[in-house]
Length: 265
Image 1: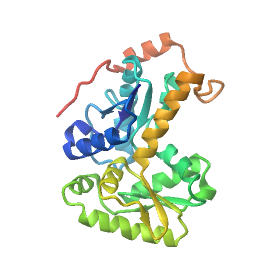
Image 2 (image 1 turned 180 degrees about the vertical axis):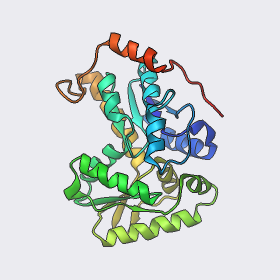
Image 3 (image 1 turned 90 degrees about the horizontal axis):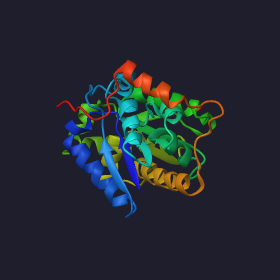
């Protein structure tokens, strides 16, 4: 089985993040599973701006384009390693293989481990996006507004070599959210999650700190297996109704989507 892990960043330029994430996923995966980590061909690192995530998601060489490449290359399932779940619904519409996003998967799983969940974004703007996602996924009654670390994505990258301040901030926010009633707390960014996992933070003041990357990987494995064994797939009756192949091929030409990576350093 082959799983395509899709980042919303130009992860080929982020050595510490890519290496840490790849090791984490390889430690977690089943022995019969291959996990390939992919990013966008190019993109800004100002990822606390939703506009940047949108451009990284829908542009040529972006998240949606890359996920279409994954199916063309014979992958069995896709895990979107970004808590905003960029292009997830669009990919489910276009692709026949299972597609799961970090945000939706983590929030739904959190509801199985505690009545109330929250999470910690790296930037205040992001926490607002995640609160809206909880509403979009129908989980408002189960969620406590997300907290944040008060840093940008470039500062998160520095924490791979010097995690002290970020870890301290994460623990402080976790205590605040636990006191507010959160029983499960999500490290609401694949990058932050990779560091929190490495630092072995699993519980704060009785609240579970969920390893969201692990949850996404294992869920994607399981759903790929169900797709193969019993044919379980997205419903095609309404939201994920699929266009025909001729239309998709025409769209690829119109929008200049690539059939292979063209990574920019």
